[in-house]
Length: 62
Image 1 (tube, helix red, strand yellow):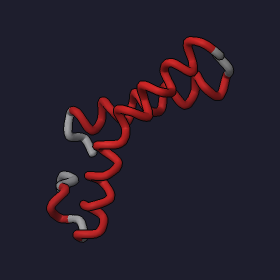
Image 2 (tube, helix red, strand yellow):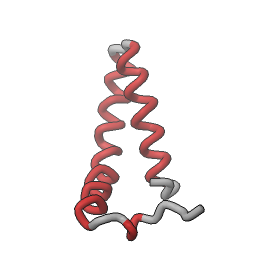
Image 3 (cartoon, one colour):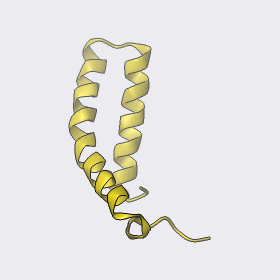
Image 4 (cartoon, one colour):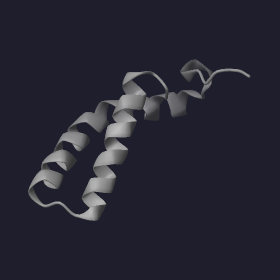
């Protein structure tokens, strides 16, 4: 089974991954503040998704 490598992706896909990777931290911080001050089920769910994405990018799983 081969691993998922970024350089195997088409250039347009690698470009979008880079954009998402850089944008996820500010979005996650905003969502975290929103969840702290006005918690709803959707906010908690989105915060969990953003934290999971940030960890996946940080550990190079994506």
